[in-house]
Picture 1 (cartoon, rainbow, N blue to C red):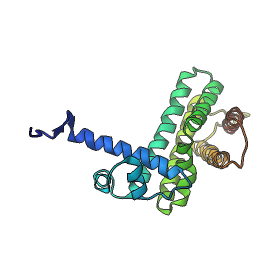
Picture 2: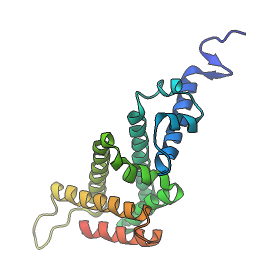
Picture 3: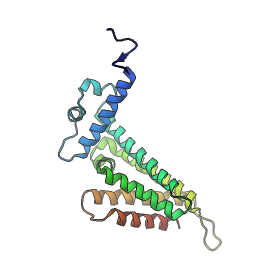
Length: 209
């Protein structure tokens, strides 16, 4: 029977392309996070069970695929942290702790995500700029959320923090978290999730209060 309108076994051509793209992203996360495996197009395709022909229908090259993996992890971190904060109620301290804990639990559940976004991306020259862009975006969002949660208090009749000071605080916090997570993932730092959550929460609250 002839295949009509791009439908094959009940699945459209568009859906098949999307499914293969998802498989390539998942395979890239696995291969890239494994220090024992060289991250190549061949390795990713083998992990995904696809040929290079299907690779090029979704990505222009390996760097484009790895950048898409980074973007996906960054988006997941942002959404997960914000959702947890919103679910924690109106207390600013509880919201900060919930946000940091959600981030840490994401990494505990799947350490590959932290490794590729924070650690392995540094080793790929073409991706260093994108890593910096993503960290600065998260720093900006941290500054915006902190001002929303904690306000901009003044001292002794002086005006509150400026937006520039908030941005500096965001960069300090996110930059520090990146180094902290790097040390934790590579085994340099032996600390429990609870210890990191408490220390990071205190740090963030200290910056903005």
